[in-house]
Image (cartoon, rainbow, N blue to C red; front, side, top):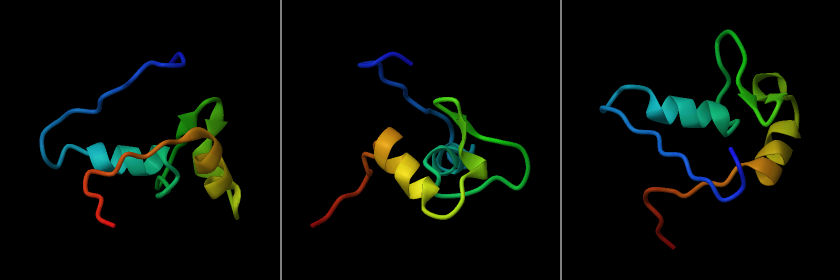
Length: 67
């Protein structure tokens, strides 16, 4: 993607949208295979590296936000 572009993930309930976003966002790990984001296989990140990657590369907009 280019800077300023947006991506929408759409699908029926139960189709795997949240699972996909959890994998891309380094919140979950795949059972097999890899997940490549910006040229990095995030499935192989260990220790603090997933949090560092998330901080530098991923933005979350949560569906429900309450302060």
